[in-house]
Image (tube, rainbow, N blue to C red; front, top):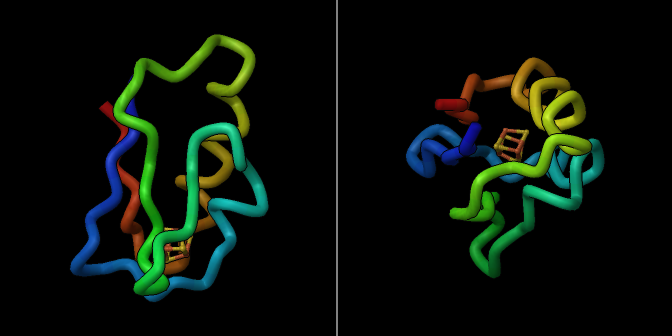
Length: 62
Ligand code: SF4
């Protein structure tokens, strides 16, 4: 599984970074970023939690 931030939707609330810092980071312009790497097995649950928690549906999992 991989994660991608839909930057045009992100409002920089920081929730995804709080829930899953292994995968999500906050950029300088207060837009979240996601690692381009395959998400490790032990972080998939928290990645899904972060995607569900995003208030603007800006996290695409694929
Ligand atoms: S939870 Fe959603 S809106 Fe908030 S920083 Fe992460 S991607 Fe952006």
